[in-house]
Amino acid sequence: MNKLLLLLTLLIIMLPLQAQEKRIFVTKDANGVLIFSDSPQPGAEEVTLTSRPNIMESTGTNLPGRKPVEPEPFKIEIAQPENNGTVRDNTGSVYVSGRITPMFQRGLQVRLVVDGTPLSEPQNKATFILRDVNRGEHTLQMELFDQSGKLIATSPVTTFYLHRASVINPN
Image (cartoon, rainbow, N blue to C red; front, top):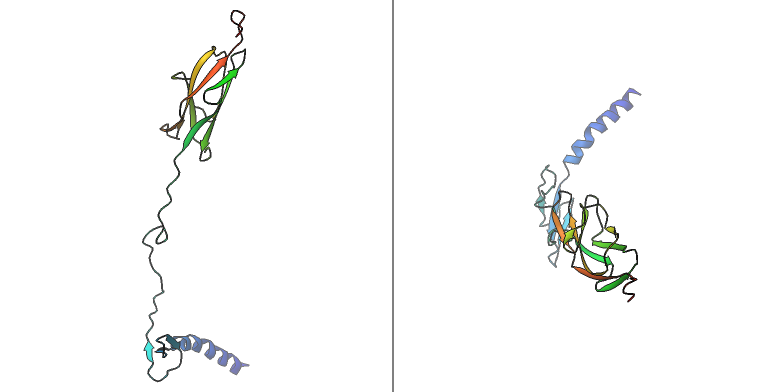
């Protein structure tokens, strides 16, 4: 039993030494292709290996040949009411909704500008309800603000016409 333990101990000690003694040789065939081998061939040269790992430091965060992807700028537009459209509502209510691309993110805020005057403070949604709007022509525009309150996008101006029936002028 003791001999078996001694033999196993010697084998365990010798394994790392054997792994370090491996030698690599390189030759070229008739077509110039490199051939690597662990046994020497006529005309072969021995390759010396270093114990340093084969690690290359990164020079950048992107793969070679690829441009960094820049975030798409935000765009905002008024989806409802349609530009140059007519809204028919005798109570003067107008429902305004906006569309933001790319998708609306947390922290963004929208402010509605009606006839050149901001309606209220910016809010975290792109839908508004206007009440008791006078009949006639009106303009709308939406402003998009980032988390720090900086204006990052403005919609094109949308013009709409509110039609309210009147007792004096039914047309």
